[in-house]
Length: 229
Picture 1 (cartoon, rainbow, N blue to C red):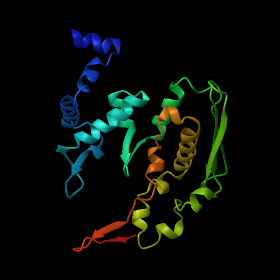
Picture 2: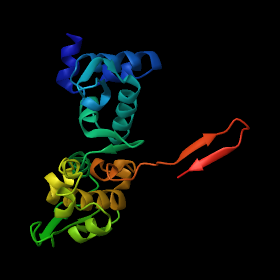
Picture 3: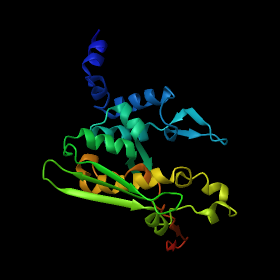
Picture 4: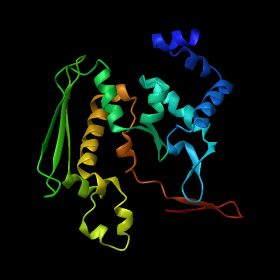
């Protein structure tokens, strides 16, 4: 009866209780992982890339739940919208937009999206303008195919027909180029105008494109270190 009341009222008290100690947090995270319903990146995978449900990552789940609580997401929303990428905790573009619209900080009716050109002609540009209702600050952020090219993100004909063309075809920049341009503009506006709403998080689509640190530091027998960039 008590559980029914919690669900009916929308009270997440049972979750809050589960997050009061390290032990209970680990138990709660493990319960979520055992369900097999967590996104694939919370599990180890076998040689064929299939997830191993018995080898989940409870610590990663806890970190995601913690970040979710800090920005006002429920546990289930956090698991679906917050993604660890390259050592960063990021939020999917759609999740970022949802938080902004539900924050009460966005001035009603001020969110304006504009697009021009086309992906086929490689002159596509997408911009978003928004205004904060608390301080009246208005801002516009844009992204374009030309900017994607300069950033080394754009996948042209020479890449997909080259030796590693099959790898480039797996990229979302090849599959959904217009949406990736839109998400990049959204990421810029989110961090520049609504950084408090997202607690400074990058959008997942942007975090995935940040170069991974490849520097290797080797320590010799004498104790000296050699850095290989």
